[in-house]
Image (cartoon, rainbow, N blue to C red):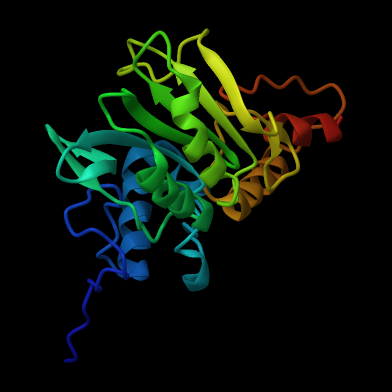
Length: 246
C-alpha cells in the first residue's frame, strides 16, 4: 500500500512558530475532512441537510486575508515588530503569505518609518480592507512624528489611514472617541461593492462568502411577505440579498 501524507511543507515566508493558521500543515483534503467531521458532530440534528464543505481553490489559498489585527511591539534591538501574541511573546509575521500584498507592504513601511516606541505607544495595527488604523495607547500624539509613516503608507495599496487614541486598548480594540483621519479616503468598497470604514467586519474570503449567500437564499427562498432578522450582518451584504428578494 502506498502511504499517503496528510501533511505538507509550510509556504515561503510562513513563520513556523505562528499559531494563526491551525490547518496550514495539512493537505487540503485532510483539512476539509476535519471541518466536515466537526460540522457533522456539532450540527448532527440537521445532518441530512449538510452539504460537503468547500474551500478556496489551490491558487486562492494564499494572499487573500485583508482583515487583520496585528499586535505592535518596540524594542531597542529589533525596532518595531508586528504579529501575534503567544503568552507574553510576540511572534512577528511581517511576511505572512496569507496576508494580501498591501498588508505586507504597509507593515514593511511602518517598520522603517514609525518613530521610536518611547515616542509612540503603538499597540495595534488594524486593517479592514483598504482602511488601516494605528491604535495608540495614549490620549494624545504629536502628529508630526507620524509624517514619514503617513508618506510611506501612500504607496502600499491602502486607501485610508487612521489614528485611534485609546489609552485602554486591549480587550476592546476600539473606543467610541479618539479617532483622527490621517490620510486618504474615509471609506472603501469591499469586493461586493459595499462601502465600509476602518472598523467594519467583513468575511475574509469574498468568493466563498458570496457562494454562502446564494446557498442561503436558495434554501430559505425568501420573498414578499417574508420577515428576516439578520443578526451580526456585518456590512449588510446578506440584507441586500433579502431586500432584492422582496
